[in-house]
Image (cartoon, rainbow, N blue to C red):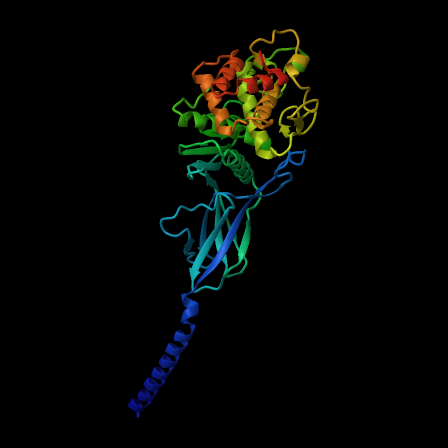
Length: 425
């Protein structure tokens, strides 16, 4: 009797297995198909110098996380990694900040997205940008759980607001714009990792600086996109020098701070050394005005369209007068009259000197005015040759840049822009 019951149970089990096999055959096409889920990442940036007349990222908002480092996991324990596939680097698209996750046999799911404060950009994926806190050595990350997605969905992934998010979003965009809007230039060819640290320049409280390959962004500059992009400009130029076989370090003397009340600047930050007492209007040695003017130009270039003559730069000093201090980069008087040194500075000979404002405007005009427009790479190379070949010292910046431009057939253009903006000394 027991055997008979067992036999019936076995026959019943066989019948169930047969039905299950038929069911499995019926659903197997669905199980074999991979569900696809597209994730597009956004960093949040909180800025206080947006919406002043510039063209790009004109408000505190979400910035595409171009080239962001990202990992995607199953939403359930043990959180199996779903992306990137084996052998693929964990970086989103440099153009759109998106990744597509394929999961066999899954039509609906939630995903755990680990979003790093790190991006990889460059024409050969050769530039890594990392935002790092003062007490850390590596970039942090945030984990975001999506709502339920269906296969074929695209979901925006909104990273939370933070100081590191500010740094990585702004630094990455500034480099991306400079690199991709230079079609005739080679850009940076070497592999570099730029570390953007959320802390004061070592030894210089309240100041930011960029000793290659690290940019230190003072806390007061963290919400200022033009200040962050300025320091990235210093890093990019130093990286270009390395790529071309020059030393990354290029020194310029900012100790001169003369020219009367309209052309001197006293840094209000306690403990700041005299060497950092320079600003947009201070009458400086030409080499300092060139180096700082170029970094201002880099920041201006990132956030302004070349399809118009005007451009706005939000300066991060003089905040007791205006926050941010608005500069019309095309011409004065907003931000200072055109040819500022010639018109405003007194008591010291102009020879070998300049102001950052005049050099900023010269670079912008040189790059954007009608005619033979030099690209980003060419401008950096002229700076490199002016420094290395001619050894521009404190007072030789204009003449050595003129020689470098002349070697590229652009001497007349350089003279025209230099004379108009009053740097030809």
